[in-house]
Amino acid sequence: MNIDLSGKHALVCGASQGIGLATARTLAGLGANVTLLARRENVLVGLIGELPCSHPGQYHSRIAVDAADTDTLKAKVEALVAIKPVHILVNNSGGPPPGTVHGADVAAFEAAWRQHLIANHVLAETVIPGMERDGYGRIVNIISTSVKEPLAGLGVSNTTRWAVASWAKTLATELAPQGITVNNVLPGSTETPRIEQIIQATAAKTGRSRDEVFADMVAAIPMRRFAKPEETAAAVAFLCSPAAAYITGINLPVDGGRTKSL
Image 1 (tube, one colour):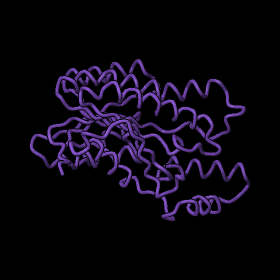
Image 2 (tube, rainbow, N blue to C red):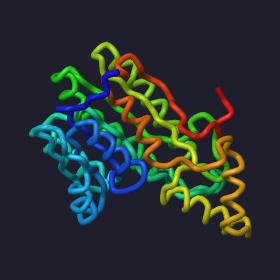
Image 3 (cartoon, rainbow, N blue to C red):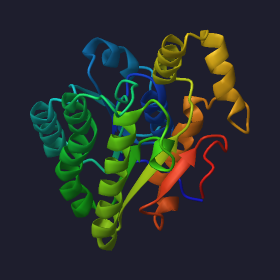
Image 4 (cartoon, one colour):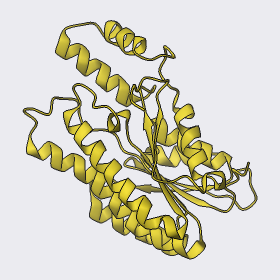
């Protein structure tokens, strides 16, 4: 099975921690040249040196930008692809704050759509021409299992995630004739700062302890544990590889069996 990414250039968003960082490390380990994209320049500088770099001619780079600032995001990625086209785009960004959809402020929806849907679209539109020229393209969006089943207390997030999934499915159909694939990976509960935010918010809202909330969340997962970021990254990496050339337009849960829908 061919999962060698030598000579391919991957742009990984939200790469300073969690699933994004694990994905960057995994892709680099398969030989890809990786550009880390996140907000904190000082963090990215340190992480660059930690990425695997054992393949001939392999190198890594960084872009510090807030994905919600889509004008600056576009300008910085345009400058990147003018030097080295992107063959693999991993769209990934922290989810909106927890809360019900009823009573949510309109500004919360607008902010979430800009950070996720609009940012994803801006990035895809910027890198697709290079994928077409080089004959290799993989776009993977890290979303959430809420694409299949809405999650309680994540109203704005549920709405935004569905919008991204619909955008991705449409894009996958349009790009299929060029051999460019577009897929979504749907993490369940994963050991990241995001899941801790959700646990703490639930505890505060319900008056229960953090440990009680955590125990209930784990009990709802057939495997009885949260995912490690590296496990989700492995699924992303496979979809980015030559071996996944005939897979496009799918939503792949990586959730330990929690999602009940088919």
